Image (cartoon, rainbow, N blue to C red):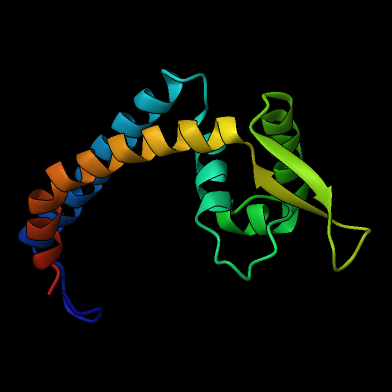
Length: 137
């Protein structure tokens, strides 16, 4: 499906099917995190924090970047996670004017459970996703 060629009916079907598969996974994810009192955005923030590279400075700017949010929105998100007992903020050892955000043990346990459930669903969807992705060669 190169950019300069006219799209065929099959191309549109493949795009629609791919978007549908992504939405099915998204709906699955939204449902599972809601069962634990989280919004999808809160779950994504926890996952971004846990999945950060060891050398990454996890602060509000990092979360804003990973979730494609404005800094003030990321700051509000972090405040809500902190109020839920899921993250803690500590002064940065490099720049004391900044804070570093870390998961609490409660968040780590919750995220581990949710990540196992999500990984199982991805494994279940893998054949379908692979087939759909292979149509875009």
